[in-house]
Image (cartoon, rainbow, N blue to C red; front, side, top):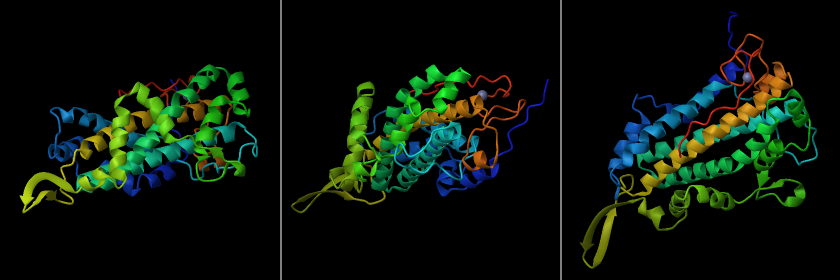
Length: 339
Ligand SMILES: [Zn+2]
């Protein structure tokens, strides 16, 4: 049997990214798991139902899986710059670089927002935590809304060199166009500049809520804490009431609030990561399917762009199947998640 050699390119860049403060926060240096920490945080919550901790192991596992994604593949030093549609030619490197760019962006966004939400939650800065959790949830809803529509057409292309070649050199590949449109969508720059128009996150949330009915309730609560509405200042209260003369009061306790927003934050983080991680894996899968089937081999450009270039015959395949390149069929990653 031939030796299996791990790919040697791009390692240094990933090491750099693992030193990001948000990655270190998620890793925790104290050896205490997020499940244990969150159990302590949520134990001091007003109205927390029995069994509230049952999903905390799931949160811990998802954070570990997110950190695995950071280390698993070389991250790009350069991503594809946005530009109006029609001003570029699509070829396999450009196609794969767009997928790898978007994966890297969504991965680091998820890391930064999850780390911010968890860190602020642990320290008692609940409004800050809710703002980060809401942004993470919006990120997840956008990824989820794009995920199956971009995946279904690729499943039909996958498995044939001719089909992958044609798609990776075409301006009409649905998978590419959907990713391009979402990645470059804006609600700020005017349409006549040639940019893509971003779909409102609420439209995407409505679609998701039909499959997961609790989503709207979680989102509305996070919004109420983000906006200057009652839940934003309730993040500073504890449920201890007293009549102060003629005034019925509630304890003002910044940093020690027992607001139920904590429950919503944790559930938003859990739900968000369970949607984002499979999306990241499938972006990598499509990129690797293109570079392997179109025979894009490692060079200076593929390293800078963080591409899953085609490894040597007896090296592990860059699609992450665990098989060596010469026998690998680049199978679709398995879905592992509950919601
Ligand atoms: Zn493969």
